[in-house]
Length: 188
Image 1: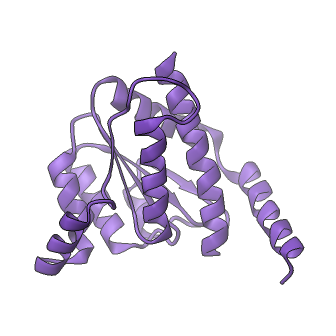
Image 2 (image 1 turned 135 degrees about the horizontal axis):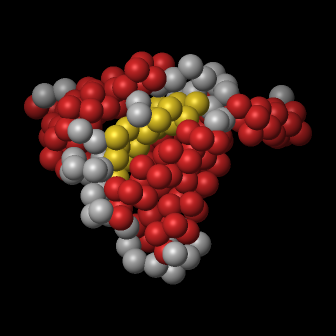
């Protein structure tokens, strides 16, 4: 495949996402996050592999700044503490490394944002189950269909693809939009 073909394929999936991602669901996700942060609750973010990097990216944008000068926002990446991840995975199970942290950090009115291109990552699914048990809202960024996360999500934002790199490209656009809207509303 040439670079031109790849870029056209990427543009096609982004155009498809523009047509298929439901604006009301994106608005609901923004509102959940703004409400959580406005009341002092945290947003927890998790994912594996490339999605773990995306989780850290989201947290960096919201704790630091995206486009506007403003106060720091209370957003925690569950994928970024190697001591917690490796100790818990070694002693118990990698499938529960995020749910254990949800147990530790979930706050009334908070949000868990999880990224999984398949929607089937066991540790993200278990984190969503723990979040529901803790009474916090859940937002999933997945590929087409939502996988197992669909059944556990307050808001499901699906990229219209089954190709991991193309899903990730849609996720970047989605979470940059979320960051921009969250920041703008809280800075106002």
